[in-house]
Length: 127
Image 1 (cartoon, rainbow, N blue to C red):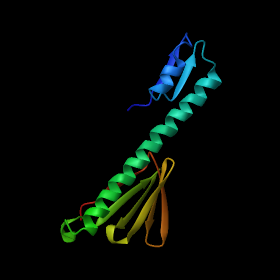
Image 2: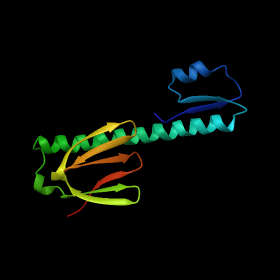
Image 3: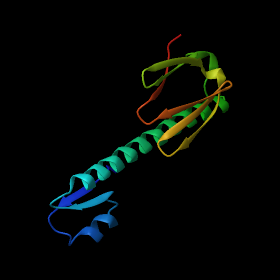
Image 4: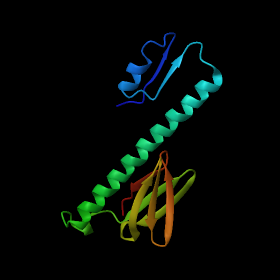
């Protein structure tokens, strides 16, 4: 379901909008501060959804590996993390676990805890 914000001159449908899971309901004329707050909430929701998706993808990979459904030797060894402008390289074998909190994912790699925002990425490398 996409993040939805209603912008209208009428407040008659506000309750209905929230019944269909609208993130916000703005009435015209929209004040700049109110719009800014709503846009921040939209960005946070999108980032949160991306972090949960990353967590689910990592969970699926770890479940596949732990169930022995895939030959571990056939999986690329390198794991590449982009964190803003930093690029970190690790291996799957050093990935101890992960967790999601709001729009962040925390990857436990070796002795380090790496916090990834929704706009950061973790990808497999080819080696």
